[in-house]
Length: 311
Ligand code: SIN
Image (tube, rainbow, N blue to C red; front, side):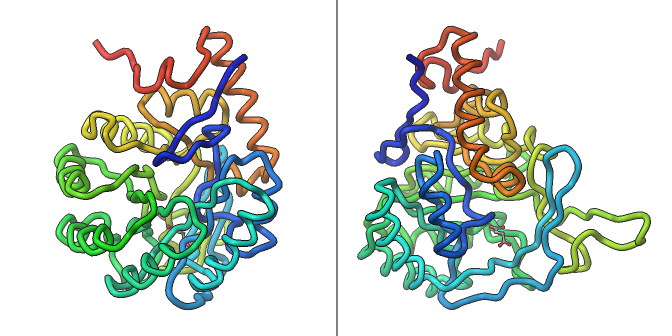
């Protein structure tokens, strides 16, 4: 019997593969589809104080080889709706619900964290890593601002919470952000948000693939898998397993999931794969992971988590 369950922030998940905040998790019908699926948790779209239309379309494009570009611009219904949805989802599907908070200001974040304290939500993922808000830099690249936000949020939040990070590329930047995160009761980081401000060009049309920001958008899927694996590995080592790491970015097969766990991830989220394949992706990835673990002689994910063979 192969067990692919995990525990994130003290919350048990039957499988270590669940949906990332982002694709197809904005409305109640979309969230109910995830509720009915084999995803062991329901992650909701990053929310703001009020309804947001998001950026003008086209704002998402599939790319070859299980990849994507998006500049959605955080379209969402406003946090109060997600608090209502949580109650409905918990009652109907009896699985953990993950809220994602992405306020535009410190005050917005404080208001939303306070409100979610009194909700049925199981886990909160704070998202200061989105590259797609027009006129707003990626907060996760500013350690001083991150410190200010985390200090405020950690005083308020009574739920288990973690932080979704943008990708880092320089060892110095990993170290700076890890130093900030270690000061607060952060239970996990989710690495990585999309690789910000890529540009995809259609040579026939001589135009970018998406409209917002002159075509600049977050690259997701297989194209970013190796950057995601590096971020997972680096944070796993820097946190010495005291803060968990959730891997996201290009997991399209069970072997990809295996690699994320080998790098140190305690769970893996899927975004582009879920967008492109829908809910059948969950049982497929679960089966492929189990098959590969069987071949390797592993019975639980803890048998190999973090145990990348480095000389
Ligand atoms: C978006 O809505 O723009 C995607 C979410 C994110 O980048 O965090």
